[in-house]
Length: 106
View 1: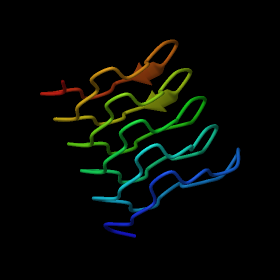
View 2: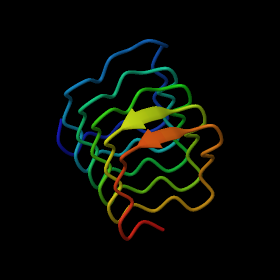
View 3: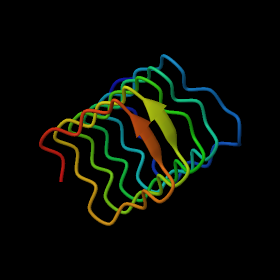
View 4: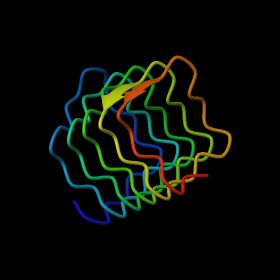
């Protein structure tokens, strides 16, 4: 789904995006609450205002993704990569990232 356009989409809880490729996707203001996004490729995705609260992001690639104003509260993720990602105004309260790569992230 490279370049998918899914603004304002609301996905029900417990949905799995594990192993999905959503590079360059538009997910602005999408609700992906309580989703399993393990090993997903969301590199360069526009996730401005996206709600990822309570989701699992193990080994998820968010390199150069735009996460401005996103809700990442209570997210858990081991080995997440956020290289060059922008997180201006993102809510990271109670998020747990183990061995995450935040090189050059804003």
